[in-house]
Amino acid sequence: MSASASAKDKIKTSSSLVNYDMLVKTATLFRPKLIIDGASAYPRDFDYPRKRKIADTVGAFLMADMAHISELVGFLSEAQLGGEGGMIFFKKDPVLDIDLESSFNNAVFSGLQVVSNCRALAGLLIALAYELVSGGSDNHLVLVDLRPLVSCFYLSSCALVPGGIRIGSPTTTTRSYTEKEFVSVAEFIHEGVHINLEAKKVASGSKLQEFMKFVTSTSFLLTHKVSDLQKRVEALTPNSLYQVYELIIPLGNWQSLGAPEFN
Image 1: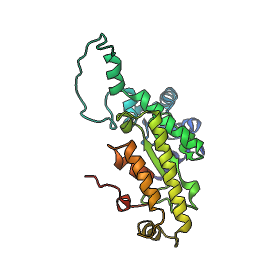
Image 2: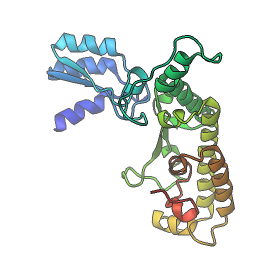
Image 3: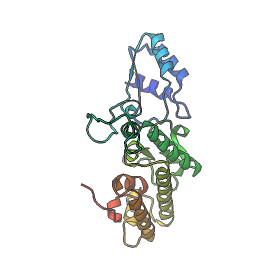
Image 4: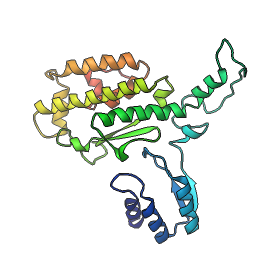
């Protein structure tokens, strides 16, 4: 167990990108029978041809675990909404001057829009001086590293007190979001972060529990900013509030701040 964990740690470089040179060394050292290619939170494309070559060199099978990027390349996806099977019949010729084939393809296979939306989100976050894991995104997700703000946030390595935000673009893309809406999402996140920073300046105590009690109290002076942000989020995303609230209101129990409940 410790040997494989150690090998895994050496795969990543300081830039959070896969170190393929080190992968060659570790594969040669351990001579695995199977190399699994995939990740649940990696915002970059893998060099599949290079990994194929590495696997062939050591006589290993190469398995692509593509659950998190399957929407970008095929029919089924854990991120896709609705049923996993169906048939659509339409005329190949335009109807009412509408190219039905292109319309259906863009709706069902929205991979290109998913990627462009995610890049728009990542681009503005970078412009706003946030640090993204690996420095950007090539696929459907963005990982925002909030650890540089550790002096301003109550963060730790504990899973219950995360040090960052993981944002995916597929679901909201299926709700007709474009780059324009994702720019707004980035702005909302930025505003939510700054509400936290302002709250931290006037909060007393050094524990997360004390901070939570402060921001949910009736004497919290920034409630009007949270409410204003809430209204603008509602105006943009009436059908997916629960997702956006979880992203932009990292103050704690957002239901206690006046957000609606969802069942």
